[in-house]
Length: 303
Image (tube, rainbow, N blue to C red; front, side):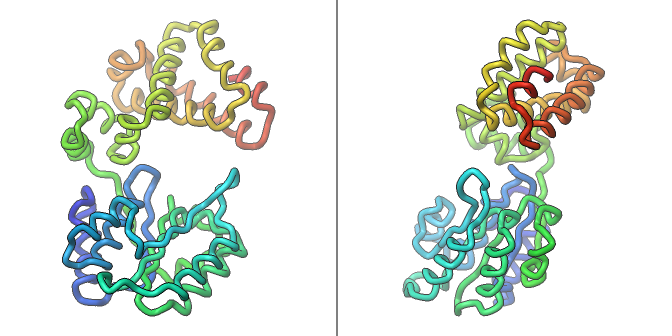
């Protein structure tokens, strides 16, 4: 299944060799920016580990449906992985019997950067004394996001980096996923080869809507239309997460204009690189205020 991961040929060869030779470490950390496919890579690795011959069970792993896979990830408003959940996973691993069809069992820890001090220590105990046949597959957005208290966990894992794919390759893959060619090329460029993000922009209505509104904002900025900008953004005065999502999309668009000025004319209502750079500055200051638990209504108005 690893061959289904886009790009990252060296990583696929290294992991494939470790799998086939029986030298795969019992804990693997896959590091990649959001949208690069670290989660998908984790499932591909798990499928090849559990079901070397492939088949329906391997496909089920990719679809998050296989019973030999346990999942640990952040929950609630904080998004942190609670120590209670780590202990529950440890008990689940120890008391459940392995299937006769699988070569072992896999525990996914999605977003390892969300382990806090207590949950990291509990996780470390499991990794240091792993149950037989269990593969731990951790993902993280970057090595820097894993707090110092978790460095011991990192030292117990074989770490690999998932990289975005070249824009042309990304566009080709998106086309095979059913995107119209022109849209595939735009999204591949806009999100710089982050396939997961591009697919989300095509398939997820909320994500798609945020991108559309961000394009409207760019157009209003190009026209210096403060009134329509105000009308658009005031709806976010009580919706912090949606406002942050809008700012993120705005950043992607402005970055695209800086990389290719013609994109401003094509997709952003005539937004110029100078104005795109200014929007990025304002967006960064606004995000800092919002994430610092500042007054959301005031942050929106200042923006």
